[in-house]
Each structure stands twice: as structure tokens, then as C-alpha cells.
Amino acid sequence: METDHLCIGGGPAGIFAALTAAGSGKRCIILEQNEQLGKKLRITGKGRCNLTNQCDRETLMANIPGNSKFLYSAFSRCMPQDVMDWFEQHGVPLKTERGNRVFPVSDRAEDVVQALKQAIRRAGIPVIHGKATHLNIEHNGCCIGAGTADGIEIIAKTTLLATGGMSYPKTGSTGTGYRLAESVGHTIIPPMPSLVPLVTQEGWCREVMGLSLRNVTLRLYHGGKCVFEELGEMLFTHFGISGPLVLRASAVMRKGNPSEYRTEIDLKPGLTPEQLDRRIQRDLADSPNRDMGNILRTLLPAKLILPILRQCRISPDLKGNRLTREQRQNLGQVVKAMPLHIQAFRPMEEAIVTRGGINLREVHAKTMESKLCPGLYFAGEILDVDGYTGGFNLQIAFATGYSAGVSMAACV
Image 1 (cartoon, rainbow, N blue to C red):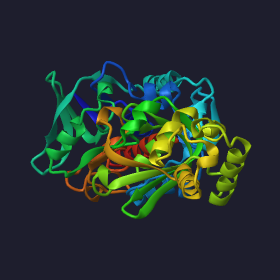
Image 2 (cartoon, rainbow, N blue to C red; image 1 turned 180 degrees about the vertical axis):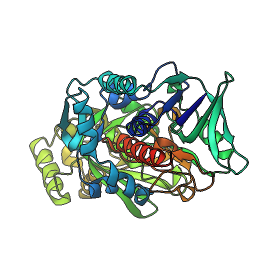
Image 3 (cartoon, one colour; image 1 turned 135 degrees about the vertical axis):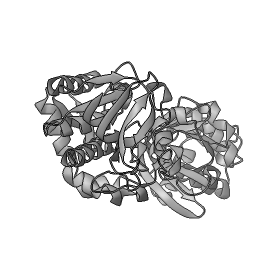
């Protein structure tokens, strides 16, 4: 079987690359190991599909915590507005929500998948369902296609690996692309989970599991340096912490071991330490004969009162008028900086994206072509680049897929 371009991987990066190359009148084939295209895309954004983020290039770059410079050319070719225009032109009305996150008006990821599938059909791009087992390499070192587990050999002038990372392995992201890239000499930066919940050393998180905090500030420290600080929402779980703030903080944890990090939660970011102290004094004066466990109910979520009092070594039965100045100040400090020590990331299966992948030093940033194996291209999560939550990772997929598609078409 022969074609101009072979795109291995039927996710957003592979599909955008195929559509882009086919738009130049080239023959394309998509090889997808799942029974259906866009399997992972269907579950993104909790099934709503946060397509992109409506922002400028500088904001995009600022939301890529590692290797963002590699994406400069790809973003120059394909910006969020280009992605939005494409989907609206293909029958998917969009809306922009808080944080400039872009969703289908229908809140249905399935509408996004269907738009891509219909575009593939209109472009006449065949989809072969099978698992790529090897790349076909000419004697001169050029990649000329791939073979499948079913014995199908596809000869192509250019070949794209857009097989994703290793997050959500049930959707087919099992690291196949890494093994194929390694077979032609590429270095793989060890895959790690990113945008992932965090396991804490403190066992008391289990006591408050299910508690959601809004409008709190989470600070992340590596050694004595604060490497992340943001206001938002988070969640306590049976293993530690999760939620939007925690997922974003996890993306910054790139150096050393997770156990080298700690967090602080400011439960009252709207109050200065002095204002908080006056508030606590007022509550004590209003109810001097009540227990501390009851007095704090107007200040803190009920589930957090006992854990915080334990950290302060204050009995919940202590009367308000017996609280010392030192105890009161210690209480204020914990409310403004409740400490949690990180033990580990949750498993890769729970990560939204994969950090690590193809070493970017071995890829041409302008074309997405391999520097080691001519005719081989990369796009999407397989590359060692990832972003924060908010639509940035799908924007990376669309932009690198588009850039690869343009470059592949120019080679034939």
C-alpha cells in the first residue's frame, strides 16, 4: 500500500496533520490502533473538550512550563483563533469561559470528534485501524512508512508519529510511539505524569476527603523557593490533594523528586495577617465561653477545624477566653499558610498529560521533522513539551500537527 503521507495516530495532532497535508492535494493515510478516532479527545475537559485558550502567543508561551521556545514557530503558524475558526467553519459553535477557555457551545466533546471525522471523510483520507509495530527505513536512513501487527506494510514519502504519551492508557496512549522513535535512534526523555493529583505525607487529608475549597491560594515550594502561587479551587482526597490548582502546580514540579516539594494553602487570601488576627480576636470576644471548635465555624470549613487545631496544638474544647496570644497568632499563621508535604505523584493513569517524550534537540522546531531520520515527523503529546490546564495542551497538539502537515506536504 502506497501513499504520500502516513499519519500514525488518530488524535487531534495526527488528524490536523493529515487534513493539512491533504489540503495541498496530497494522498494521506491515518493509521489508528483504536477502533475509533479521537478516543482520548472524547473525555477531555470532563467530556466537554476544552479546545484551546483564546489568548495571544505570549500568553501561550507563558503557559508552557518547559521547552516553550520550541513551539514558537508552530504557534506562529497555528494560533488559538485559527483553531477556533476551523471548528466554527466546520459546524461547531464555540464559547469562551472563565480563564479564556474555549468549549463547544453544546458542551459535547463528541461534536468536536464528529467535526474532525467528517472533515477526514470529505478529504478522502482512508483510516486504517491497526497497531504500528515498526518503521520502514531505507538503506540511506530515510523513513518510508511503517508496518502493522496485522502484516500491512504502508509505503509513504513522509511519516508522522502522533501517538500521544502515556496518560490515560485505556485510550491507546501506551508509549508505542516512543518505542518506534527509539528504534531509529531517538532519545526519550523519561515519561512522567503532569497535571496530576498529588499524594501528601499528611494522613489527615483522608479525614476531610471530598472537601472542596474555593478562592484559596496554593503556594508550592521547592527547597526554600516558591515556584508556584495561584488563587483558585482545590480538593482534598483520600490520598492527598487534587483539583485545578493542584494539577497546575504539579506541572511545575520538574526538578528533583516530588518529596522535595511542599505546599502551603492560604485559606483567607483576602485578609492580611493583621486583618485575620483582628477577625479572630473579634470572634473570641463575641463568644468567650464557647469552645474553640465551635468558635472557628464562622471562619473555616467545618471539616478543617480539627486538623488545623491539631496542627496548632489547641484543644477543640479550649474556651475562647483561655486562648493565649501565642496560640492565637499561631492559629492565624496556619490559616494563612496551612502546610502539606508532597510524597508522590498519583499514577500516570490519572495524569491529564505526559511530561517527557521525544528529545526536542533531535527535532527541527520549524518543521517537526526528525534530525536523525529524514522523512519522519512528530506532533502532539509524544514530544517533550506540555502545558498547564486551560486548553493549552490541545493547542499544542493542533499547532504541531498543522506545522508538521505543512512541512510534510512541502516535501512531496
